[in-house]
Image (tube, rainbow over all chains, first blue to last red; front, side):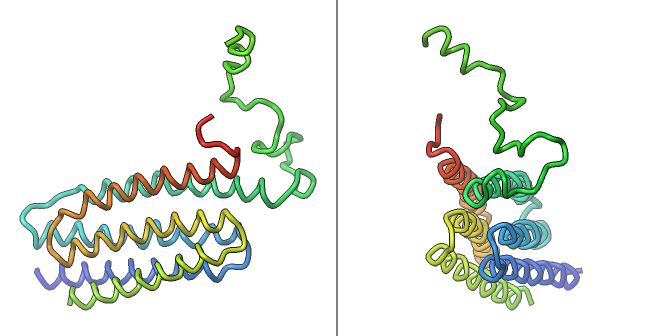
Amino acid sequence: MDLFFEILVSALLVIGGFFGLVGSYGLVKLPDPMTRLHGPTKSATLGVGGVLLASMIYFAWFGAAPSLHELLITLFILLTAPVTGLMIAKANIHLQWTRDELPPTGTGTNWATLSDRPSLMDDGADLRLVDEGD
Amino acid sequence: MIAYALTFAFACFGIALLFNLYRVVIAPGVPDRILALDTMTINMIAMLTLFGLREGTEMYFEASLLFAMVGFVSTVAYAKFILRGDIIE
């Protein structure tokens, strides 16, 4: 049984290392900023995920007691990676293109991040503060 | 067998960090630098976990959790600074 878990941990480590390398190579190799967003997502999910899973299995089988706290990091990275991707994509949109150059959205309204209209999350609190002379 | 796999993974993430460093120093635009820094923190989390595996302690778990949190906050702050010219409005 020890051999099985050794093979499993080694395979996860090799897969994780490979995808981490591929993700960072994509960051250098891919041609333009929006495609370059693709690369690091692979190293964020499969690369680090594989390494953390390997660590979890290793300490569960060879260590003193099984622990799940590597899952916490995995969960945190999986939750935050889309948010950072969105922020960087928005920065790219604002720096690279004007409104006329972007493709139409198909709904008649402008792209949400470029539109002048208040967003759905804006309840007018800022304007109320201005009215009250704050 | 695990020792060889660990060495392989260390080498992979080390080369990945060098790629990221290259992208931080030589980049066509500012968002690329932010993305490279974000990838750097993610690769460092993997490196710390690998180091903990090699040493056989779970002590480095806290360090990698801190890296994950601070890395996320700093990336969002950088992106926000580019978007709005301000971090806390």
